[in-house]
Image (cartoon, rainbow, N blue to C red):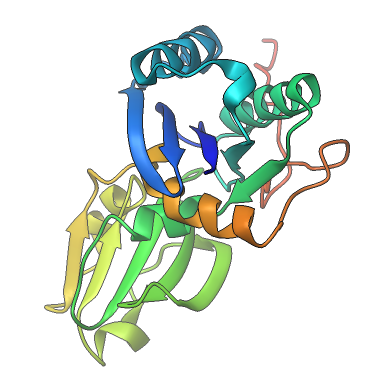
Length: 224
């Protein structure tokens, strides 16, 4: 029986869940534009364990959403996960943030394109089919008026996540559908985390780093 704690901090949603053999048994999450992960994450971990009646020492693995996403959010989530794995001497599992978003959308045909808002007109995105198999890998893309036309010409295209908001402004095709309310959540990590646990597909706790996709750029105010 595998008890796995899942952490999702790649976006504005601070999300913690606990699963048993891939089945969700408890969850606590809060979506806030203020990115209060540093204050909420450890509190949520404690509350989830208490709700499930589980102690920290009963955990058999920690799973963390590896990105792409918020640089600070990913650092907090991965640092916490690695710290717990060190302290408890249990394995670390990573899951893909964008695929976790895609799993929230059920479709019969066409493609799902989960996307997270980046700078200006840029998004972090990937493309998945109706079986959640990757059609196009994760990348950073600047949205232009002809974006995703090759998919839209073949069938329905579901643009989901915070990046879909900016797409609404410039994309116009009858096969494009927008849902900007989908956010990364630890709830969708349960199945993938358990599958990796069964295969002993673990990360090196000492060397694992989040998948930032792009280098962090510190922006400072220029002096007048």
